[in-house]
Length: 386
Image 1 (cartoon, rainbow, N blue to C red):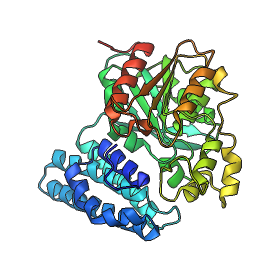
Image 2: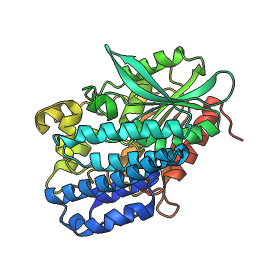
Image 3: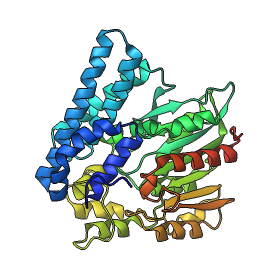
Image 4: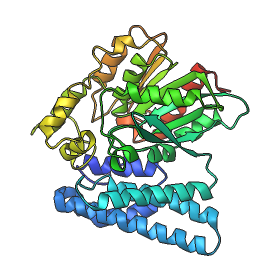
């Protein structure tokens, strides 16, 4: 992994995620070099330096987009707006959940992304998925082919969103293979959490069922050829959904989970044995689950366990993991794969240090995982594999 900040895994992960979502290394270097010393401290004032640095970068690129817009160059403005959205989220993701700037940064990110994607003519439809009296915001990316196409539902993880997933390129790879994609901000993540107060739940199959119900009404999709995938904590979400929502025809755990409660306890330990994904980790958990204390959050997190669930997965199942994943041990991926004994077709794909993609959710080389997963679900669902 590109480790710009010595000894600071959270910042290095964030840097790689930002680069993998379309950030330019020259722009990121300009701000990152100003906070190298702060990365060594890694205290609360250091987190503020990160937020300020990426707010400056986002604002700089946003202003460039405004100048392009004023000149009538909407394609150029749109390109910069989507990059600004990426940088605004890099700032927001490291803010404390109680920081009043968090909502402002998120709304600005959404505005930049939507306007930028519209001007760039990205093949996106903004849709709403009915769910328990509310709606889950989602991005639908059609296959672009005539007739009804297969589709992958893509859920989030603990601390990403539908926009980041789109910017990572996986929906584009699906579309190239004749597969549509529905990227959903479900309860506990993204816009659903931040702007609609929809907190996380271990019963993610309810969100999967709502997504399937919506797709059954979609004239672009063959509802008999729909699968699900999700990354990071989504390595719990997608298998759980596939275990209980039997209309799903395949499943990808993009970064495995096994017993997330145990993993969280290991991260919160004074002698932590696994790395955290965001700076204010305990506070972020409380934010996700709508709890006042970490003890209350852990009561919900104890249900995030696939030990009694994996055997209920009967569809084709792919587990993708990195050999050097510092957040979730490789042993957890192996346990999940071994427990899915009733899958019609199961596979464990481990990306090694030698080949690249060995870090958490292939943050060090996301293109390797995107290609592999897209080829896999296109083959399983009947997309275009040639």
